[in-house]
Length: 453
Image 1 (cartoon, rainbow, N blue to C red):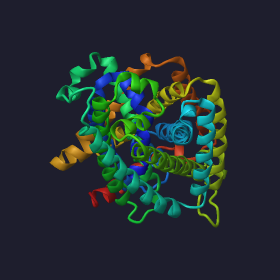
Image 2: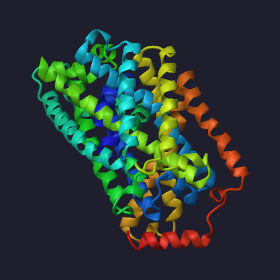
Image 3: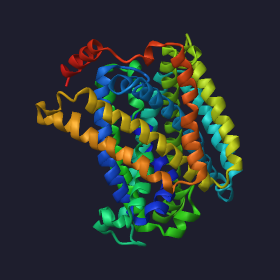
Image 4: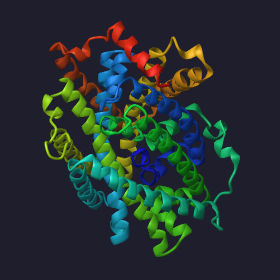
């Protein structure tokens, strides 16, 4: 589920053009530095999950570590970015499918949205019928996807005709030129990795709930880190800037034909479709489980906490997200080209990701501040690495704001501000969630976690 959540084939197909536009040949460096910071957040999630197995994940954890209002913002941020993602995820699926059936329509916003909507509705049905079935299907799809990506990564790296020759300069900070370029690339790289934390939203439905989600996330992030680096280097080697820009929604389809012309090259499109199906499912799980947790707590409508008796899924939350996502699909028709929609969506989602990942990192440091210096292990995994990851994400958030266009800013901050309305409404009703945890509650949780570290 951790690999499926990050969706390596989808992320590469959807985001390569945006990353190249931001940092040129510096994509490997962006993914490297953001990846190092991301592992700090993974360790933070791993530890926080041991404090409480909660489907809301950061929504519940940050409340205890920092403040209830910040915990609520974490939950709302995930709901927003997952819902926006429904639009971003369906576009590559539609484009990839059309590239197999009728390539001339692969960059048509209308046709791409239509085919993507069909994929989305099929995934909604799969999620609504139960997470057990979803997980089994994910194992099959992700195994095929990763296998195909390994084959094509090798074809790229050892391709005879190269546009560029490999150089270690692609990993050096100097490749970015300016600080603004570095942070623009980091924001996009965060989008690449995002999604692994679905393992923690499934914690209430997982055996070994205190440890298994953390291990799944760690293995997932390491796997996609290797794949992202391999493909970004491969893209630098075999694709020109014009090829990337002209095929922003179908980069992998073109790359596949470069390294394996003919029907063989179309297999990479199969990987994109499988990856997109997988990530739509995992994001639907993330957003509905977060809404379920908030509905159960009474910090959103209690209806979101309703679980279907037969399917054991939060059916009201699932249907609500489906309706909103469909409205966004049709609204995207008025935004512009597929490439424009993808670029704006990735940046808007990146803002939300930076918020709740950074708050999770800071929460660990605050919660375990008295234990950080008790051992080298604690210093690394409870202190310095999560802290640096949190600082990195927070800095990215601040630095990229002046570089974003008005559409991205309105979507990113407007949707976040919209969350303040339900927060203050339910806060005014005096729900216990908005009361600061007592000292006894904090100490009790920390003692339990320390026993399992």
